[in-house]
Length: 393
Ligand SMILES: Nc1ncnc2c1ncn2[C@@H]1O[C@H](COP(=O)(O)OP(=O)(O)O)[C@@H](O)[C@H]1O
Ligand SMILES: [Mg+2]
Image (cartoon, rainbow, N blue to C red; front, side):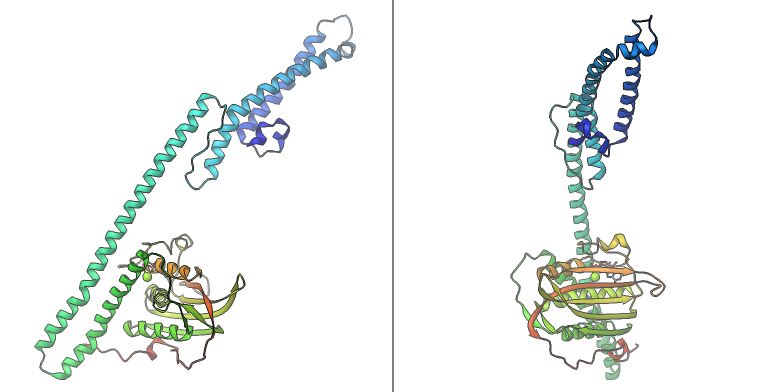
């Protein structure tokens, strides 16, 4: 803003329209003023020709013109410095700032403009206080909702067990009893797993930063167990898998926490694609700041995340298009990955190749010194390879 105070640099400054207008008016006024003073001064000598008069009196014209010009420049400078420039400063500040930020009040301003600064600063303070209250209220509402969901989901397996036990006591035929158990137990399992997952995420979000117990983990084994365990519960899924591992080392991570990251991203994918489509899991070595990391990619087709939602995905309580989402899964995943000095991000597109969209979650984890051992884990090419035929009641 300083540049605006300086008339020499005015033309180089990307000024506000108001300054353009003032300068335009000023220079027009200056020109008219120059012509009038010239005419006025030479008007005293009417007996000689106009040109002669002008030449004869040019030093006077020039002298008076210079004095008056300096005076007018000085007035313009005062006007710009004390009124217009602070106003432009105020406008530019609020136009460009995305956050509410108070302004330092410049000295030597006219009283009205100082008042304007004070009023705006006070409004900003009030808005900030209101914003904090709204965020707090939203958080409380989200916590209340999560507790309600949790209470509902905790009750579910108990109610199911109660029903199963009641039904079983009424059965006499052992084959019938076996059939009921085989059908209903996976459902109870699924509900218990869901509650367990919710509790782990809630506990993760509430936990303070702690020293992690790290161990060397083979990524392939971890991925294999996450995929198999979750598909055993969601045994009606119709998913084609592709795995592409090109990491060389194991990862250095806390087993239970990192398992939760894979599970949350994997379950989100299954739910978002309505348990139908393709899932691909890939790894590769990457070097970040001279340190070896393994980058994981868990991708799925048949779902899409809008650009404006991507930036909110990892915020606690952000949930969309789900009946019983808590919005804690990805927030917990981000917290865990970051506590392992890694990064997590998401990429989603919709195009001719992925007409229903595709989503990929990437995250990096530090590589352990130990090399990964290639195991014959028999990863499934399709979900149907994993679970026994579903039994109908
Ligand atoms: N693979 C995906 N495809 C589409 N949307 C996704 C995917 N993964 C996550 N999301 C979106 O991110 C939101 C936040 O996920 P998350 O934090 O796990 O909370 P929750 O699963 O409880 O809703 C989900 O509600 C969903 O809208
Ligand atoms: Mg989730």
